[in-house]
Image (cartoon, rainbow, N blue to C red):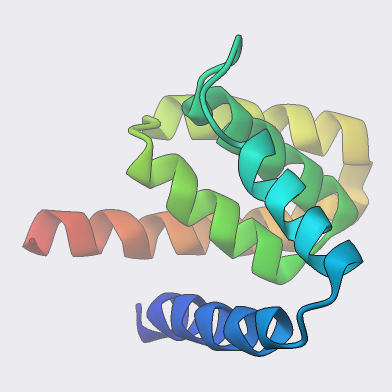
Length: 117
């Protein structure tokens, strides 16, 4: 589970360094990313599942972890996550299987932490 908390900490530290640069284009992209995941016509929960499926297909490990954490925080059930990952597998084909395994491992760790807390 430490790897997930390490990811969160590392992400926050790197974002601080990036924001320190005060680059308008970078800051605008980050702001756009943040706003894209706010509740709108689609809920944050659905948007995190969309982020998860996209990162699975594109095989972005850090994004897989991030969106899995956020999906759980937004109250996604294991069945909702499983269905989302199944669609990702269909769209991305067998090349996504290693990422699928990793996301299932992450989900197990998140649920284990929830049951302890």
